[in-house]
Length: 79
Image (cartoon, rainbow, N blue to C red):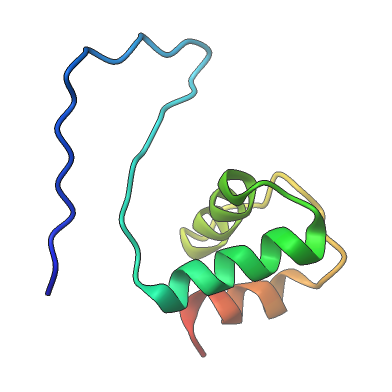
């Protein structure tokens, strides 16, 4: 199992308005799902990842995409 390590030389700027930055390393299968959703829905990788994270956490999506949420949710969970 590989470990994602990243050294930050500078302090990160304060985030305002309830927005936060999250840096994660993901396996190739997850990355492909994020890329696929981004391409299909014309989203950024960040937007696609955010959408799938919300679905996986059981939260309402911020975007109403052309696919049904249950289809995207099952993709997210690997069903």
